[in-house]
Structure formats: C-alpha cells, structure tokens
Image 1 (cartoon, rainbow, N blue to C red):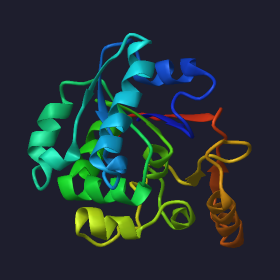
Image 2 (spheres, rainbow, N blue to C red):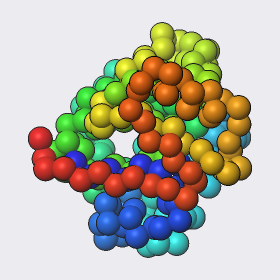
Image 3 (cartoon, helix red, strand yellow):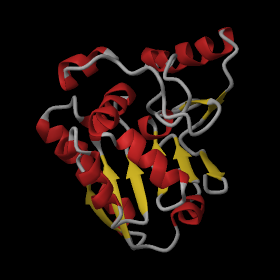
Length: 209
C-alpha cells in the first residue's frame, strides 16, 4: 500500500507525492467530495486540480463516481488504466457516501491494498482512509449526505491507517473553529490522531495485502 495524505494538495514537499505515485503519467482525479457544491463550483474544483498535476508532467483525468453508482465492476475496469489516483478535498461525508454508493470503497481497498494503484488524497481525501469519521463533523456537515446522495451518513472510514487525520491545523488559511473542535474531540476521547498543517503530508508504505 502506497499512500500520500496531505492537508492541502502537495504540501510543501512535492517529492513525497512523487515518491508515492511514481513517474508522471495518467492519474485519476476523484472530486466527489465537491458533489454538494453548485455545478459551476464543482467544475471549477476539478479544473483547479489539473494544473498542479500537469505542471509536474501528469495527465489528470476525472473519474466521477456518480457514473458508476451500483456498478463497481465498471469502476474497477476504468481504474485499471491508471497507476495512481488523486482524491481532492471537500466534504468528507459526501465523499465517503459516494465511495459506498459506487463500490469504490471496496474497489480502492483492493487495488490500493495490492499496490496496483497508488493513492494520494488531501483534506477529505486524507480523512476518508481513517478508521472513523467521528470528530470530522465539526468541520464538514454530515447532513449534506442526505441532500446530495439521498443516503444515510457512513461514519466508518476505509480503515487503511490506524489513526485519525485532522487537516488544516495550525496557521492554515482554511482553519476555523471546527478544526479546534475536532482536535478537542480527538483528545477528549483518546482517539489517536495526526494534525496536519497545510505544509504537511504523511507517506504510508506497506507490503501488499
């Protein structure tokens, strides 16, 4: 398993990202954390991810999980054409719901766990791989799941790592009162966590499952 988990995009040291995803090539972009946003804002969210990747030689292509709802086999087939996936920020709960609705949670767990696919994600894309999303509700609104996806909130993360991630800590421009509440919740409930500033990134590398 190869994971690059950051607070905001590539952080201050892009070499960590390159170490995880390997040589530049095609990279799948998943932007479903932005599905609750107005259509124009969501399109802009996808566009904004392309330039940082293109500037480093990658060829980003969006994979919209909404195109694969209830059809994980078609999603698996599409992902097999890529060496890495890039999962952007937004609402962690909406992202988790779309992963579940499309079967991407199981497909990615298989492909990433077997090292067939490298995973890079920031903010919501980092939070979703943790054991639980409890505590993230202070920053991301779980109610957006019902209005956007028409399903119940999924509180379990993908469980690829054994601790929580709290992005946008410290002097982040995206820091707000919700981040402090999330940190307090983790401490008060003795939940292992890592707080990431927007300069920080975690690299996780393990043997294939």
